[in-house]
Image (cartoon, rainbow, N blue to C red; front, side, top):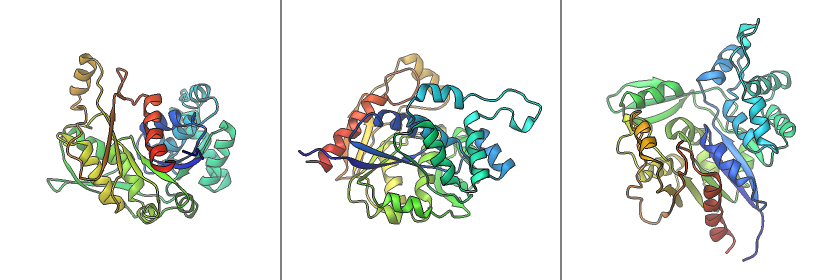
Length: 321
């Protein structure tokens, strides 16, 4: 085996993608690229989008913080929420969201704002917003009901509605710079993250499937630890892989799935929210399955170090052998 740098694209958003990036950034053989969802409609990001007309900054900010040189200090400062101020419109937002939104307003270019933030934080890797076009996530359920917005889709799961279709309205186009960057990836990792509201929206952007078709290395799916409400009862890691494969128009090559569990008290807490450990299910023939104990704490988060080693084991075996 001859070691070389691998140019890796990591797709998603929410809290899952930053956890993956935070572990991978310590590997000197990886050139990291986060391709991040831009369709957050809730919380501080949604407010800033509606009030200032800027792109929602939250997912991009969290990924930049995960890749930063001093992540702990950067998170402490930039994820703190502003107290009640005389200018009430600023109250309750995180300092980082306001900083990135201000940089976008003054530069007129969200990619330039993200690059400026990367420079400030000393990030090891790039953060790419998958699109700079405004769009809203929409979902249709088995009973024919339709909802609009990330928050509403999550609430649909909580109410027990089963998602049958998701799309962006209006359709959003991949940014040309991001498209060129993806074309240079050696491999792609998708997830972990909220499946219908963080992972799929990134893949639904027009042009993403076309450019992923040209990636010669493996498509690796890191499946979630839990289902996300009653609407996902019975949903499995194999189902995640099937949805992703249909969306991008090519098979998932590798599934990385959890087989560990926290204490019974922690499981009971999540069960009360109708969230249950994600079963593996029956992956289609030809998909490699890598399993391990990735859930090591009382909170449903992948262990960074274990996950990063699992991803590297797959990439090194498939690309460096």
